[in-house]
Every structure is written in C-alpha cells, then in structure tokens.
Image (cartoon, rainbow, N blue to C red; front, side):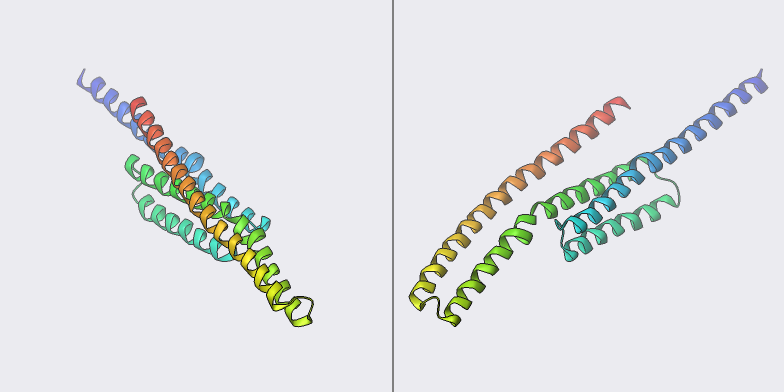
Length: 183
C-alpha cells in the first residue's frame, strides 16, 4: 500500500512540475514574447511612418532592452508568477510610452514644420522687400498668438493624456485583480 501511495505522490509531483514548466514556457512564448515582439514592431513602424523621431525610438528601444535584460536575469531560475507580473507591468508602461510618443506626431511632423516655414517666409519677405517691417511685425504677432494657442492646447493634451494614463493603469489593475480571482 505504501508503495502505491508513494508512486501516486511521485506521479502527482511529476505532473505538477511538468504543468508548471509548461505554464512558464507558454507564458514566455505566448504572452510576454508576443508583447515584446509587438512593442518592437510598433517602434519600427513609428519610425517608418514618421510618428516617432529617431531619438524617441532610441529612448523606447532602450526601455525595451532594459526589460529584456531584466527577463534574462529572471529566467535563470525560471519565471515566478510575481516576476511575470513585474515584466507585464514593465511592458504596460512601455506600451503607454509608445502611445505617448506617437501621439505627439502632430507637433513633430506637421505643426512644427509649418511654424518654421512661416518664420522663414516672413524673414525672406523682409529680405526681398516684399514685406515691410511693420507687416512682418504684424505677421510675427499673429504667429505668437498661434504659438500661445498651441501652448494652451498642449497643456490640455497633457491633461487628457494624464487621464488616459490613469485609465490604462486602472484597466491593468482590474485585469490583474480578475486574474487573481480566477486563481
């Protein structure tokens, strides 16, 4: 009887160890690895489409490299549930950072270029004599009002992004709470 009980316990332990190993492998292959791949693609696409500048992409890639180094250190002894949660938290932050950097593309691409173009046109107009100093002063005043409007809009945008970041954190927290309730 003891031999049968011992064999059953060994089988249960073996099955448990296999299941844990499989769960870790699946989480790495299915969840975390897919999120890393997705983040890298989004950064690369941001550069291609012009919604990310090179410095922004470099910053985001450094953040991703830091996460990968953290994973390498953690994987040496297998990923625990807490370590997976930390990695997913880091990946959530990276996702928010990618979104945040991509959202400011209006300023980097269109609006900034148009402002610089307008300044150049005013300066050239003065140089060529097609604009008087008085006309240039009036046009620069109009440009200053536009820049002030942009500053006000930027502050509003920051508030909206702050609210959206808080919502993202709330969603992630609720998802984690839901995952814990299932376990």
